[in-house]
Image 1: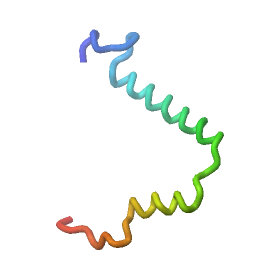
Image 2: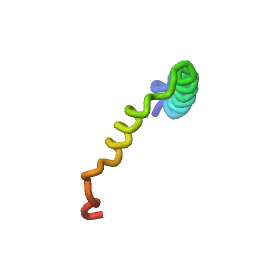
Image 3: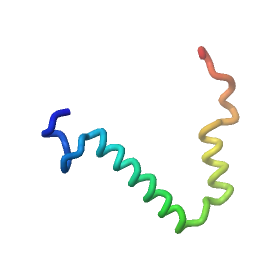
Amino acid sequence: GTKEDWWFGISPEGFGTFAMIVNFTVSLVISAFFPPPPDEVQEIVDNIRLPNDAGEALNH
């Protein structure tokens, strides 16, 4: 990008890196204030990621 695309003198790539670090830090701080999810919720997430009835991958 050109200088017109920069925010406060920071290139878009640099600003994206800064925003990623801030996002990660905020996520860690926020998660410290809440209990972990119940086992039922974790099981639902695991089943969405790896469905039991999916079978083998095709054409891979």
